[in-house]
Length: 505
Image (tube, rainbow, N blue to C red; front, side, top):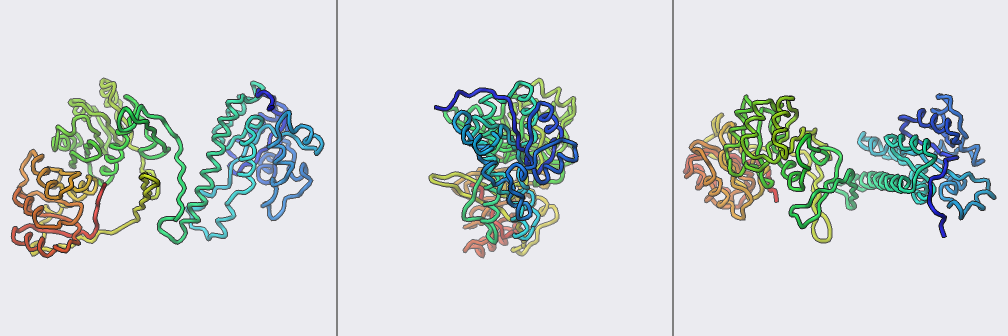
């Protein structure tokens, strides 16, 4: 039977780190508490420069480093010291002159960082750590006796344990979990890079999601939910207000994606993953009001995303109605003070885009769908007898940006500075057009229209023209393109093909 777990004073620690952050301070604390240190290579050099004594691993094992340092910790005396069970393997360790290693501090060669630098493969493979993961896994497996620390941010846990006389069993288990997560992520990065060589998407794709936070529930109260991620929208937490919900994160991601389409001052309103208001202009308060009034019924209880600093006057306007979440790059102190009057309203700072490589992942029964969006170029081509005017072209560009972020089938009417009518998520494209017309609160005369996919028949264009639209943008590519172009010419609608479809299921 395994002996009872308890805190035991540390006697031997093995330090083997690429990232030397905080190393000297940690080693000094170990020395001051009478802990003997094993180290080698760059770690040993850093300790020597800091004036901290240590035992060279090659001296301890009796085996010199080989092959330019490729083999140094891969030795039975090291791994037996990490794997030896106290109270079970003591006799073997004593007989072989093996020190029980109570603490392993290790971090790995920076493969993830180096793999983004375009190095030749043989050079990159030199950043694949072998000894480090082997030691980390050995120590984590033997967590009941060995503490393993893989993150310099956790060095404070070591100094706390030194003061108390050792790590508790719960602390060692928590550190082991983090250690296994680190080696899993490391192996995933190597696998994904190698399997992705020469192909757009790898045959084997490995994912690790970190920073998991349990949410109150999923899409509905009877479903469990959590959010994972450290960057971008996934890593965002409110500056104030209630805890974010599963649906809040979905809507916030949709809002941020659309907002990032615009360089000019912009406000976006989103509800149930669909844009319900978009406007641009010079004054943020006026822009927000314009966006909200596109569809105020839908904007109620939705998400508001803004790409300029929110001032007190903008905050006052937002608070005139019920809004679930507000996100913007920054907020004045006065604006935050006003928002605090709405205790449940979630207020977040808009993070930088995560740069996750354009990978999108969705689960289906039995597996996953993985999608990557490489850089693409649209080729806008006028296909009608009449070119769009400069004003029509500006409105078409705005409509197209909004349409790209609405659920299919999607039809968007727009003026030069705002969306006017949005029809999204329909099984019929002509129904999407009719809904957009129905939801419009202002005149559609002279408006521009965008369709996220080609028009299979002239009926959608005819509905748009009947409502007052004078220009239309669509991908093109239907077998009836000629018929649609003829209808556009007959109705004097300037039409552009982009060559790129934007389905959003």
